[in-house]
Image 1 (cartoon, each protein chain N blue to C red):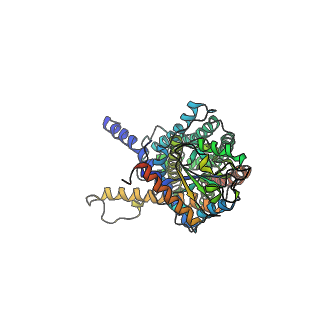
Image 2 (image 1 turned 90 degrees about the vertical axis):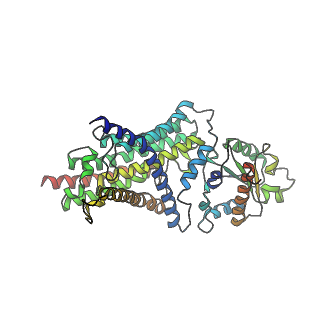
Image 3 (image 1 turned 180 degrees about the vertical axis):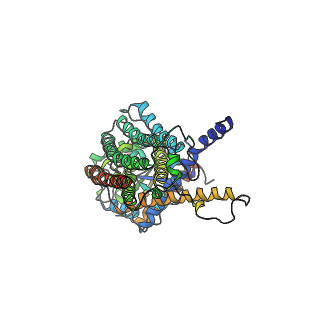
Amino acid sequence: MNAQDWLIRILFILVIPFVGIFFGLLYKGFDRKITAMMQSRIGPPLRQPFRDIRKLFMKENIVPDHAVEWIFHASPIFALLAPLVALVYLPIGPFEPLMEGFGDLILILYLLAIPAVAMAIGGLASGSPYATVGAQRELVLMMSYEFPLAIAAVTIAWKFESFSLAAISSTSVWSLVGPLGALGLLLITLGLFAVLPGELSKAPFDQAEAETELAGGLFVEYSGRNLGVFYLSEAVKMVVVGALLIALLFPQNISQWYSFGGPHVAGFALFNLAADVLFFLLKLLIIIFLGVSVVRVALARFQIDKASYFYWVPMTLLGLLGTVLVVLEGAI
Amino acid sequence: MKLTKTFDKALWVFHVNSGSCNGCDIEIVAALTPRYDVERFGIKLVGSPRHADVLLFTGPVTRKMKDRVLRVIEQTPDPKVVMVVGNCGSTTGVFYDSYAIDGPIDTLLPEGTPIVYVTGCPTRPENLINGVKEAWLFLEKLRGDDK
């Protein structure tokens, strides 16, 4: 790789956090609006999350007396940085991962675990009993949903014999399997969609924040800028998890399905690129709609033991069954 | 701390029951339901005073609640607005001159805290929304927009 490539790469790496934050907040707005519409409300405008962020950054930043100050300030930053870093290793629409060859699926899974841990550490450091209970719940939940997530990731990587996300997203995994394997993949898809609300701490898996029982849980002592950074982290995580799901299961680009004009027409490549990016954003919206908004409206919060059970037993079994089906088909 | 107009459109509300009969509290919840849907103005009920911009107090302040009310006000980050919902909180209402009451709330607040009154016994959700409008006007005055 020559110097010019590296320069372009570095330029993109500097830009992509802002893109991630922008679309994260936009999708948060979509989520709130769609949720409101499903509850036959009008709902806040799409730009509401941007307003919330501006307001939060304007407010006083209180550090409680009992808090460990530096951890209290550091944990929101880690919670935001981890998903931003993950964006660099993820294929976005028609583009390959920016740092292809330097990190793969396993790195993404670890980066996705960091925000939850950072939130738990921040909650424990804030010295409030409510936050402590929230932190414990967050860790229990994390230990529960990581296993089905890992099963799904490993199965798909096994099919490709590679953990590289560029390889995984270059071909659709559905085209590599027969009917039996497709059934297995369907089960794995279900498992991944079940992990989505847990990963994003949305109802029915928002036990760690639980406004009604824990008064905000992990975030109970956070205010102003720190709370705003957590808010951003949540938004970016939504994009990252969505993009991961797309890369694993639905990496198709729209430009492979139409062929008007042909590649000889000037500007066609640019048009294809734009269409692919828009298609990616649409896929992200559909995933967030199905995996977050619908589930959030349909279900109320589970008790923490039931949420943990849900991931450990039914979802793990579902994932393992899917893996067995995919592997069996390969063996026959 | 500089106030901008964004602040008005993203008011997060924390609700404190300072000895109310639960009448106003139910009306606050009613304002969040599909019929009135205050979330369309960006208003959200939050669970912790640390997240709040507006403190909703319902009820005359009973003796036991006085210290808690003051503490919740201290816990809320600036800039903040206090909104008193119902006749009890505004004037102590039917509990006027009671030995068990330390209210009304405006006699307890620290000097210079912005305060908005929403009257009624209980108040109506429409009146609450009107109260939010008054809070906006108040914030505009604080910013000095109305010259």
